[in-house]
Length: 121
Image (tube, rainbow, N blue to C red):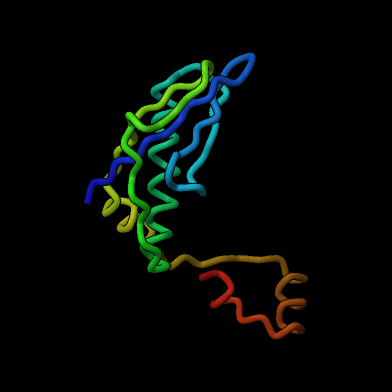
């Protein structure tokens, strides 16, 4: 399922952009370069991660504001960011891994009754 949301790129000095979604308040990032394509890829990544979290928690996806309704200032521009949400949902599946921790951490966790298996899931 493809979704599209407007993002505002605000110029930072001396270089770079602060990038935020108009409709998904948790979807924001920044880049310390003037490379717009890199900023777009960062916006795609953060949008996919945040919206996949929405889906996993049963939160309804917000409606996208039409790009023509987005107001910007002189040092800003707006662009549409498109992602394949299904790709992000598939990529967030758990993978079993063996983990080693320091003995002191294991001893303290055992004393506190921490279930390490549940803690790392």
